[in-house]
Image (cartoon, rainbow, N blue to C red; front, side):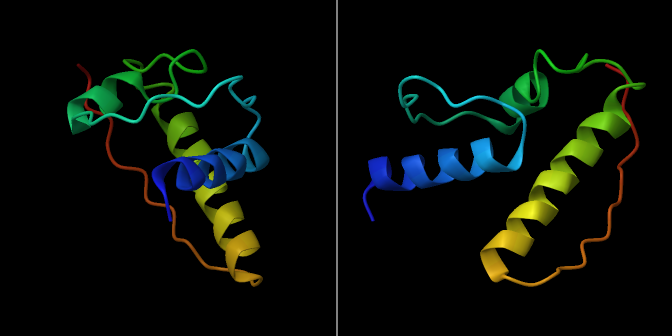
Length: 89
């Protein structure tokens, strides 16, 4: 499968499984470090440096993962939610 096709499929799942809107254009695909994602994940929806918002971010991620699993497999999947401790930056 080509990168563009894969990106279209992944974005369609992301839009289907959460309340975020689809981008007007496909974003460029580029390497980003783990630190980048820690800093930018859920930006705009939550305060990424807030320990108060930390459980909300984790619950949203688990809900999306669970919904994807259900739709992709056609059956209920058990995903045990474990919220890691908040490390205040």
